[in-house]
Image (cartoon, rainbow, N blue to C red; front, side, top):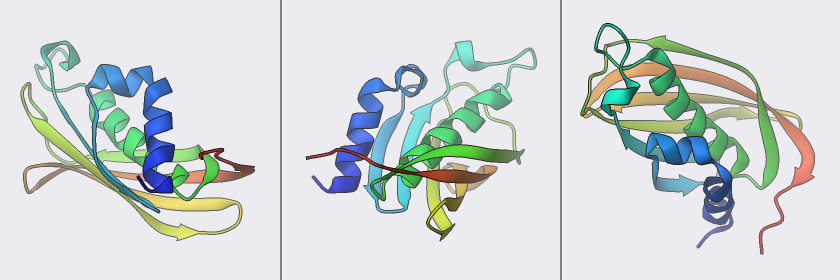
Length: 137
């Protein structure tokens, strides 16, 4: 297991919200994370489509994993999402987070949320990179 994979594994053991979402980690490498989940009935809003917070939360989890995968602890300071298409119960969503730029104290990431080949959400996020590393042996 790589250092990046160990960090994400450690994060997932404590991340009960991502566990509730049903997140499965598909791939992790430095500056990159790919995760998936399936939309459940209790995630729907009054229009019978997935609540916007669901795709946002999935993207946010991928963002957290990708931004911490470098070994330096990172916390979000700004995020936004474009809800491109409605999401329905039973949809399997994949969030792919990729580093756009990184410096000593900041990192910028783009997360694409897809249903199959179809883009359903586009998330952008900025993290503050703390001067603290993950203690992974």
